[in-house]
Amino acid sequence: MGMFNVREPRRFEHKYIYYDERKEKLAKIEERAKRELGMLPEEEYNPERIRGKFVEATKHLKRRKEGGEVRLTFPVAIVLIFLLSLLLFHLLN
Image 1 (cartoon, rainbow, N blue to C red):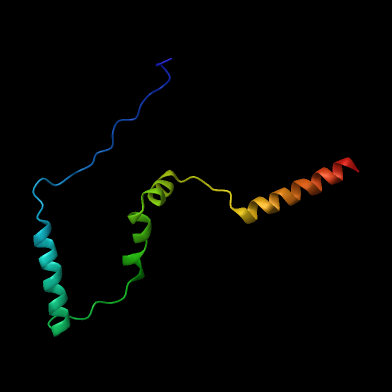
Image 2: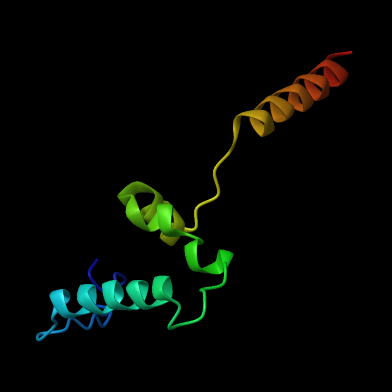
């Protein structure tokens, strides 16, 4: 039944060949030092800058976010069980 299993092509993932991690770290250290000395203006607090950093750091949360699956939480499950028991009670009486 290979006819109906149409596979999607692999997504494009660009990886830099020549990337100097040390150079980027030095640039960040230099920028932080200039901010402390007052040569650059203070960096404003922006909540968008830190949003989603914890999710990106963990594999299982990243997988769940990419999957987009809807999870049934405990309170919702309790309410559903209660409603179903009321419905069953109503049908039996």
